[in-house]
Image (cartoon, rainbow, N blue to C red; front, side, top):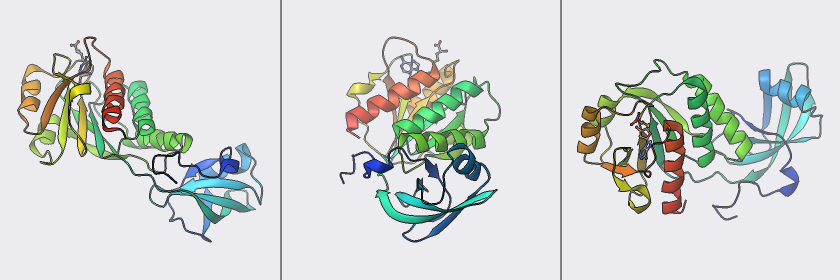
Length: 248
Ligand code: SAH
C-alpha cells in the first residue's frame, strides 16, 4: 500500500463503524469497549456478534475487529487483520490563538482532517477567550479522525503565552507567521517540515507582538493574500497551501 493512499485497504470495511480506542492493537487481541462507545456500537449501530468494526489508537494503524459479545454496558471485540497502516504525519504544528467556542471547535476539526501533527493554543494580548476547553477540542479531533479515516489524532499541547512560545521556540522548526499586514506570499515560501503555522486572534497581533515574532530567528512572515480572513479561515487556508507546496 502506498503511504499516500487512503488508510482503508479492505473495501468491504468502508461502511463499517470506525472508532478510536486507547488499547494497544494487535492480531488476536480482545478489546472491550464501555460507556459511549459501547452505546454507539450496540444501541445506535446495532452491532451483533460476528459484525465488523474498525479500530485505531493513533499508533498501531487501523484494525478490523469482530464483535464477540454484546452486553448491556459493554461490547467485546476480537482483532482480526490490520486494515490500514499507521499514517505518516507531516511534522506541521498549528499554533493559534484561542477563538470562541464554535470557531475553535471547527478549527480543531479541520486541522485534524487536513492532517496537522499538533495543535498548540497561544494566548496573545488581544485573545478574548480565557480558558480553552482542551478535552472538548480533543474530542472534536478524535471524532474528525474517526470520520475522515486518519489513523493518527493530532496532539493538543498545553496553552502558552506568545512570549513563552517565542522564548522556547525550537531552533530547527520554521515558524510561519501569517501576518495580515504583509509578508512573502505563502505559496512562494520555502519552509519545509519541521514547521509551524502561527495564526493570530480575531483582533490580530499588536504591533509589538508582530515585531517580536518577526525577530524570531525561525520566523517567516507570510501573506495569505490581499483579503483579511477570519482567524479560523486563515488557519485552514495556510495549512492547505503549506501542504500543497510540500506535496504532503
Ligand atoms: N483584526 C485584524 C485581523 C485579524 S485576522 C484586522 O482587522 O486587521 C486573524 C489572524 O488571521 C491574523 O492575525 C493573521 O494571523 C491571520 N490572517 C488573516 N488574514 C490574513 C492574510 N491575508 N494574510 C496573512 N494572515 C492573515
